Length: 338
Image (cartoon, rainbow, N blue to C red):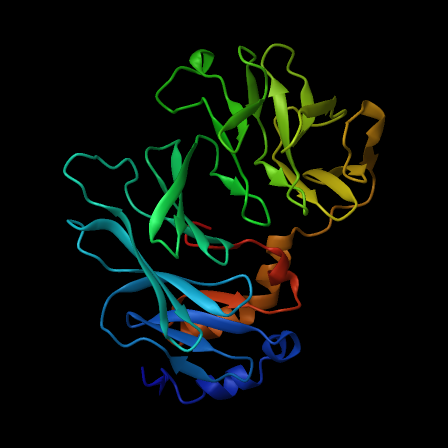
């Protein structure tokens, strides 16, 4: 495919990008859609069109190593739910997968694809809602073009481990069931891990994976006692939990792991557990008086906002950014529904 330089929406577009300090300092590169085609933008501010087939495209997404781009392409709905295409950074097609090909003997739960996520170099997750509470996530193998796994989540979506090899999700709480008839449960790789069958809890955070992909943390509130607990479940063993003292009863909680600590944040309050414990105890959880650090998503947004706005101002949509040695490299390669 012959590469063509982008016809810019304004003559000053490239000049403005060349002087963007964020791009120069962090060596960001971007991919985005303009007039239905895929464009890339390197750290020098050069925009290049890498597709030119006239088919509608959306949600371009750099791979974890920044060498490939995945995106959704328009497809006849009588053929499949969606079409996933993967190309190299210069537009050479590497994979083309029909997602949920239509079959006469099989219905389809998912209504449309809302999110793409790179899991491994050869696997991508495609997720979408089934109803107001339940999301389905499909794992697609790029080499075979086949769907190799799917998960159903009732609480914010399936969360994949950093290495893409494990999945955590919550089921047991469909929107159509009365609350006293629901039994939310955390699952890892199709196995219920918390709580025990017959015990009712509400989960107050999304599951969060440890950096090494061996454990999942989540915050739970017992429906019987109303007590809040921090729960850590390991892939190869069981779960441990400890009370989260002095926490707001109905706050919004976020969890974050670092190399040596697990942090819980609710508003201006922060709790931490050092060393990523194998077995939680009440003494292990410490309340911190220090203000919480901005979360990774906020820091990533601050890094790319100027460049994103310039792309949008020039008629580009759905930009995604990548750099080798910045905060973006620590975040999931995920786009679409975020």
